[in-house]
Length: 266
Image (tube, rainbow, N blue to C red; front, side, top):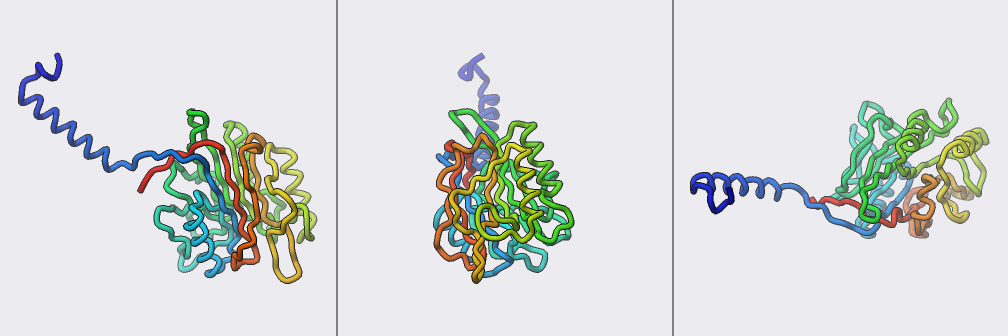
């Protein structure tokens, strides 16, 4: 039976139901496609001024995601990272978080099973050649005074999970160990980290020998970006810009995934 054959009362009720569905759909945030996902990475050293600089940088440059360590935290709340249209992701609990992710309103989910005080991970949906893919983005802080060598149990489990599920992984971390320049705080940290990387499918994405940590006469590469081997050709524009960060750690910028992200408008 077609709509033109339906009794008038039924047609009116059906039309009302359709109108309600339309109104409900309007409340949903539509999906918008963008061409790439841009990243910013930095250790803020719990600094108010550095938090202000990073929020301005993210806003002005239109960064999609910021991987942050040692954020400014006060009165049981993350401070200085409130940007309209962006969401903060950090592990809950009583302990003061030392890692968070600031991201636009993307199709994104937290991974609480792998998140802790020093690590937060999120799952992002994106499109590649018209097919939906998934990426895990992670911000990690590796404390220099930890009793155990890196990586943490949470990071190691996250890496193994991504390998088993065939998920791309991007990790922005403050390793407290140098990569190609400077002097490592402890040789044990660097050796343990490199041993772990050699046993995984992660690669160091840093390009060049530009220092990421500058304090007085100390210039080291303690901030590193890690990525799955399959992302090597997709990560572009990795750089340490010269603009001031008001932290001893400098900004790191890079663009990932020559694909499309699934965004939702606020």
